[in-house]
Image (cartoon, rainbow, N blue to C red):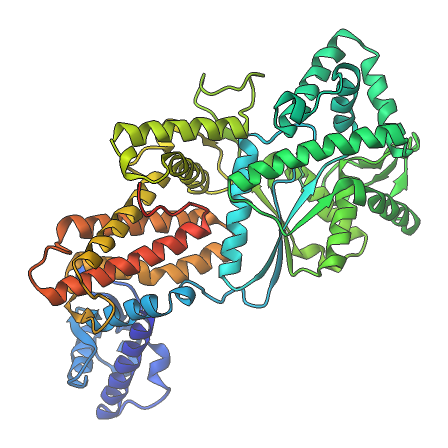
Length: 583
Ligand code: ARG
């Protein structure tokens, strides 16, 4: 579509030149002044060229100039131009657009949706980054959805992307579940108890918290355990390894179950020492100072913040110490052009400070660091609280969504049509979850409503999945009827408003994707896929596809539907919604 607009710009520019020559207006290259606008309403045309910029030099009013320009247009044009007051409005030749849009989607479906705005850039995306003392919760699901989708979008825009996960596997919180397990666990394991590893470890974290309320010595024991761990006590290290492995196995199962993956894992236990080293270096360079209590700190007055402890007086590190080490080791592993941290907005302060410190330490690449901060996921009051009452467990939520989706399938009497209703229900649950989490701009807080997100109608993932499964079933039928929609299709037959609208929405997708990549915002893609689905539904509702009487038109509309399907499928990939050819 843009190509055709540019072609029109050249045509109009040429006509303006002729007007200038005929009227003896000399001077600059008039084409330079030509601007391309969008008419305020679609009925007025697809492109508008204002004539105001010529009035003074041509000594004519803009409407007069418009009429003169029209006179100079050649006969054979890719569309139609009309004078509309001070504008020339152009209606693009729909058959040209239909042909170019559809043949490029159908013939180059792998490359059509690949803008190249981020070509050649190396981008690392850190997301999820859980602690190994408990399983994932709803907040992580938003994080995972955002991280995975951003990575896929950036890749589609041409970047080389590395998805990384930082496992916070050391520190006092880890020792807490270890201590409770050691005292009260009686050697139970995920196998012996039949409990998924991360949940088992999480149970001991909860037990620790109860226990520490009853016994004030417990806290000290946990501190001692941390020191023993740092000193490499073999017993403690053995237990730590075992319990971390349980958690990791459990986490990985949840990732797999939600189609989330990573190229690389970083473990805090392996990088926190590196952080300590750099604190020492910064101290030597005079970037940090030693406070009276023996702790090492940074003064942040220049950015309007209080001082911050980087190493405690007993030499143990704090949360930010490991992040300093991690960032440095990542950049030497893989010198990125950008590192995106997908982390909730409650850590904005943390990342401000981190970026400031790395800058002070002299790392020039600090300017490539970006905190993709996202809002809270709240729940409608009184619903879906987990046993501890505050957070929603990710695995439990998925099970619940899946069973709700299965119920929906049954209530629609669709169970018999499906090869594996349970698997379909799971995919619907994922589609519902990911779409719901991603259609909102990352910055915004949101309320997660399980019932609403699972609806087959409206602005939901299942509605999108339903739209594509309908197209798939229509194409199966077309095949059975022997319709050949791949060869010799006359796209110029697609002239209806509904068809034009579909072509327009599809044609815009690459630019929309580029915009989502530049602004690191999957909601832009999600919104466009929804627009595409809605536009298709209107087309399908208003016009005959397979039942039409004109065979050539049936072919063209089937090809159009096929292109929509391809485009939606690629869109689904970008926001991690499973495609279903039946549901
Ligand atoms: N594990 C941390 C938490 O649960 C989040 C880590 C975020 N990433 C980072 N590089 N600091 O709060």
